[in-house]
Image (tube, rainbow, N blue to C red; front, side, top):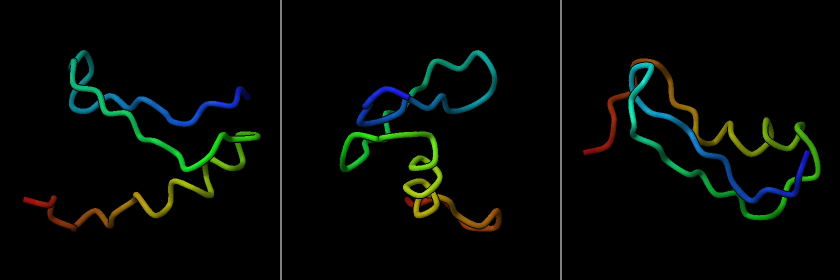
Length: 51
């Protein structure tokens, strides 16, 4: 894996043009780090989005 400091995520239905870049605090050394850094971003399915 490259030393990327973020990932671009598509939002919405397939073909939607909305994109968000999620920044990481440091370069990643491998795919295992993605799983370690992303859990804080997950929410339970019944959580309401922030307003």
